Amino acid sequence: MKFHAPLSATLVLGIAFATSSFAQDATAPAVEQATETTAPAPATDASNTTIPQAVLDVIGKPEPGKALIVFFRANRFAGAAIKFKVRENEVELGKLGSGNYILAQVEPGKHTYTVHSEAKDVTNIEVEAGETYFVVGTITMGFMAGHPNLTPSTAAAFETEMKKLKPSN
Image (spheres, one colour):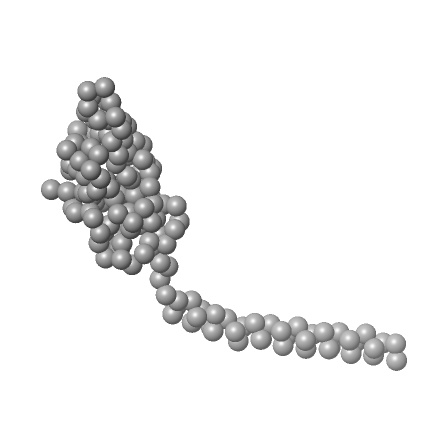
């Protein structure tokens, strides 16, 4: 009898293991099917914050394999007469005046953007494909002219100013 007890225990464990393996195999297709019908992830900015649909309606999404950089400047009376060019290397992307924005579709990697008047500001950004980055332009007071600055920003800051912004020419 001692011999049959371990055999029956082994048999019971074997059946339980086989049933558990079968149950796992039976659920595998259901898991795969669930992932196929999952909605695409919402668009996010570089700070991993979801970009509101109203903002996406204005700026769009990055082209496949590229990143989107949105340069914008709030519509303010102070410094409104001053416009500055946003450049990458020697290539002018556009002029940022009060209440303007520039959209730049760029390759993934490191980028350097400059703006200048009597002073020069350099902003370095490393971007990833499929991501959207926001950069706000501001003017600070200088000796003879305003000093332009570029600073990382967010989709929320863009959304706050969006109704007063126009594309740069």
